[in-house]
Image (tube, rainbow, N blue to C red):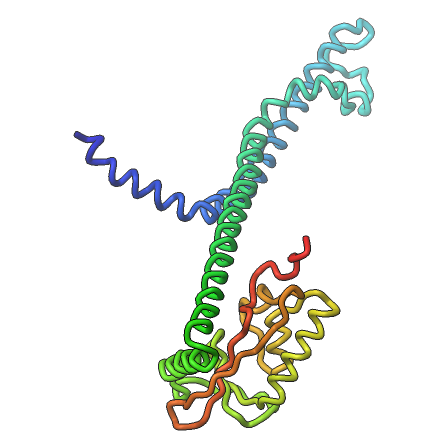
Length: 280
């Protein structure tokens, strides 16, 4: 009865532990580093005391065995009294047990760090695989719409989606970034930012990225934004394009909520993670 009542709580704890495994393992690794350092310090002090006592006992044996030396050791020089009378092997035998706790802590710490890396790598691989599947499905969906209804209808659908995004993100509630590259109001669908630019500048940035793809194999989203005059965001360095497919910036025309003509930009293909290592 008690077990059946605790089972749901145990399952919930297991779920929470699985979900937060990287954070928990990382925290264990960090705390383990501190604990290992403290235990090593304590073990070193204790080992020093044991070795000192061992040296005293060894000196007592030497004094006892030498008939020419008084039992109180008064005939010995200061150097002899303070000398190290234990061999390295004897010291190891005396103090090795002191270092068992820090050794165990060190092993647990290293294991936690390795496991945290493995769990994070596995989840990242799953996310990348899911992202690739989603991107492929989205591309197939766009192609099917174009085949079914034609290029004109596909463009109308894209414009309507862009209009919905602009309407749901009113320009009055947003900061319009003045890039100094034009005075046309633009909206980036990917980052949700309003900025001013011109078709000439946007097309030129697209051409520069494709030129870079041709000669450097890859380019990041940050590099495109820098060409346009926008600052990078927290993720733009992590995504980009590779030379297998050239970049095409898609433009949609819409009206901002304050009545101004607005150009919404999108990317085809969308920037993806792992773009630098596409050839490996």
